[in-house]
Amino acid sequence: MLLTLDEIAIKHGTDKATYHPGRAHAYTPVYEKFFEPIRELPLKFLEIGVGGGESMRTWLEYFPNAKIFGIDIVSKTNPWNTVHMAPDPRYKFVCGSQSDPTFWKCFAVDYGVDWDVIVDDGGHQSDQIIISFEGMWPHVKSGGLYCIEDLGVAYGEGSVFIPKGWPNHMAFIMDRLNDINLFSNDLESLHFSNELAIMRKA
Image (cartoon, rainbow, N blue to C red):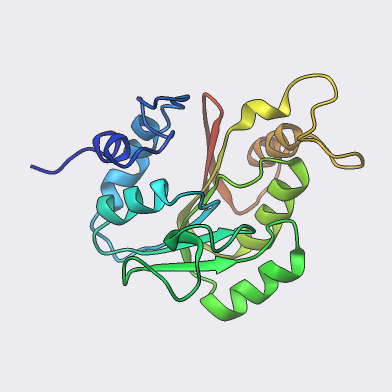
C-alpha cells in the first residue's frame, strides 16, 4: 500500500507535514489533493529552498518517476545542496539566488522551460517571491502548478520579509486573483489555504 504524502513527509522530517518537532505547517494534506492525480507521471519538479534535503527526499519518494530539482543560495553544507554529489540520480541541485533575475534566465536556458510543479519555500521575502514568480511562471506548463509557502510572514507592521521599495507579496498574489475575475490571462485558478497559495496555469 502506498504511503500518503503526509506519511512520507513525516518520515523524512519536513515541516510541510502535519507533525514536526519544531513547527508543522500541515501543507501535505492540501498538496495531496493536487499531487495525487499526477503522482506517477514523469514530472519536472522544482523546489526553491533545499535546507537539509528533507523535502527533496519527500518528493523523490512520493513521485517515483519525477525529476526533482532543488535551488538554494546556500551550498556545500550537506549532500543535498552540493553540486556533483546528488544522493539520487533523479535529483539535481543548482546553486543560485532566487532574487537574481539573471539567474532565472540562465536556469531556464540550462534546464528547460516546461515545468510541471514549482514550489517556493525559499527566503520568503517579497522581492525573492516576486522575482522568482516572474522568472519562472512563464515556464510552467499549461495545467502545471506554482506553489508559494509560508505566506504568514507577509503580515505585521514593518515585517523584515518585505524589503523597502517592494510590494507586500500577499498583495502581489491577490492581484493575480483579481486578474482571474477581471482580465483574460494565463492563470486558471488560485487556491489558498493556511499560509499556502497554489496557482494552476491555464
